[in-house]
Amino acid sequence: MSDFKFRVGTSEDKTQVSEFLNQHFWVEEPTRKTTGIEVTKDIQDRVLRSLDLGTSTIAEDNNGNIVGIRLAIPKTKESLNKNIGEPQNILEKIRKDMADGANVFERFKTDKTMHSVALAVDGKYRGLGLGEKLYKENMRLARSLGYTVYVCDCTSAFSAKACVKLGFENVFEVVFSKYKDANCKLSFSELPSPPHVKAVVYVKVL
Image (cartoon, rainbow, N blue to C red; front, side):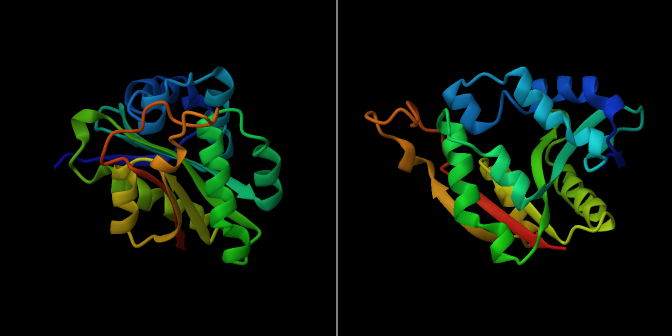
């Protein structure tokens, strides 16, 4: 099995991480793959902002090449409400429904959480448990920074499987078929392919 080195991502990694996401995340994320909704510069910038905060984890091979990333961003109740406005597309609608349904801050009586943004692994290194190791390393980082509640919004069955294996609690879920309505603007024209049939909010108390 390959040896991996884990480290905290920094702002200096933005260019490499952006390229890595383009190759190994955005093109494979089930809901974006189905909808074809563009990954705008604003979306990229919001995701990459985690690297400025020192809250993300990068895995490298023995040659220093990035082979996996776990991006995560701290959230408070105030920042969550500020960032989730009126949905403009189906993905924003799902995101808002998940936040409202999970109600993490009230449910876990906390004023801050570490919230996962993206998990991506180079296809050549899949099946080696690297995704789970990135979860564990990033949760360890979150705990060292004083966060006790770790949240994952999973729209992929593969990331959801990892959460279950690591003992996360399913606190809310919505099936994608709920959003299949030809008369509704905020709906799927084509549903994500199985096994990606639902979005789940998973939480682990650290």
